[in-house]
Image (tube, rainbow, N blue to C red):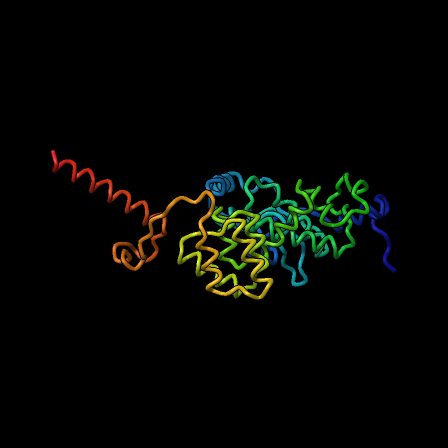
Length: 303
């Protein structure tokens, strides 16, 4: 028979359970895997460069949150940026809070910790909201996983209403963002780049992948993006089974209310003057500079 230890005699069951559930330790970076389908992008921006320098000088001051895996390694819950900064700063390990978590708890904590960032892309919100909403539904719409004081007030509400109140969005806005997960990546990238607004993007999400591919070809060919009104038309024709390449071209060729007249040059006529990876904006800026130089030289000759 195993006799109780001194720690067992002078501690409560709750305290012993908490000790088993959570502790802090330094963990080698190669033993920490990323969260599956992590929706937030780790960007090498100015803030990341500052974090790398800080970690190089002082180490990671705020421990990451991980959970143990069956093979003895760990899964990152909160701290992907700190892990990258540690790697770039040539650190071999980082301090982590090790916490036993269910899949649902891990997902909710992962999303909540990343939503505190200042800049969040629409695509990040889309997949994060979807992951958290699915997790909330799976675990019975509990709201106490992050010890929220609003839990009792929110009791009896729909999951999207609860999520909306937690992140400061309406339930309709939550569902709009989640619709973006139905977009093909090139179109979703345009939403992130602010080339397509949220409302038209939501309408486009109801097009099939093949229809979105056809639309993408037209967008690239015509160098234009759909307005909200055009996106509504595209969805309507798609629902009626009448959307094809000709219809898409016809809708996208319609002049928008605030659209300015544009002059286009076929890409194949100027390709030889630019590198293969040159963007449309780079080409436009170069042409404008060349025309300004041409005008200056012409005026100097006329004097």
